[in-house]
Length: 121
Image (cartoon, rainbow, N blue to C red; front, top):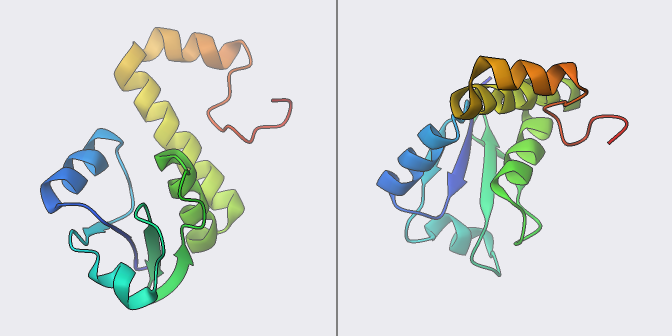
């Protein structure tokens, strides 16, 4: 599936952000907000999701975190179940990178679940 996020930022900043957070979705920089203007966006912080060249998702909440933005787009692009799986894998990778295998496995053994939408939370 061809999909991408468009974010209003410079290319270098977006590349750093995508690498830092290990995004698995292509992201395109729109530093001058040309797409935003063309789509009539009324606030500064806005992301767009495209699948096969078609706009399928727009950020609705200007206060949404990067994590919330990514989860919302993935749900539209891949369906909720696949989105949750991708998000969980991404969070686990971040935990492993930040805390290492031992701490990550301890969190998981004691009921820690990578998804913020997990049942029981």
